[in-house]
Image (cartoon, rainbow, N blue to C red):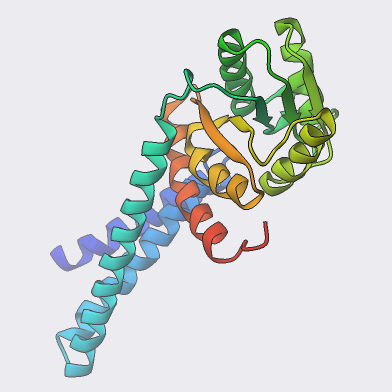
Length: 251
């Protein structure tokens, strides 16, 4: 019976992951991650059984668990950097402009992520009322208006000078088109310091991309209202950082 317990746990983990991935709850990545963890656990169990029977199995067992330990160490290191960057308080740093990065819009209603960025922008603009604000985000599937327009409607009462940018479809384009807009406005983007409002889990990667676009930025992190969504996005972001660092070299 004891020998069957790990396989029962693996099956339960896989079923939980499948349910989380399939049920619409904003945590699909966590579901796929649980499925992946179940697969790795199953592979580990098989490798251990093989290692008990042969020398080749013991070598593969060592390689498997060494690689797994290295991968986990890298993941934990990346997560630590992401968390540290997302907790920075740069509200007192003088800036020349603000860029608010867009997020999903449900019809014409900002998503939870976008609302959190809007609220963070409102708070920040109370301390920095006299700088131009680029609202960056195009219109995607399921969106009746652009993300820039959704932000403009929510922030028009702040009295700030709002510059909508509604062409972008990803973070790299957010910065590319926002930079062009700020240069048309008359800002020297080579020397200007720009505050970037985005979610806390996104601050590190957005800073990476902004640097590649030649922008000097400081982070203005926005927190999601629910911890489970925050955990989901922090986990997903670690993999996105690796993808950006290794493959998105031209963004």
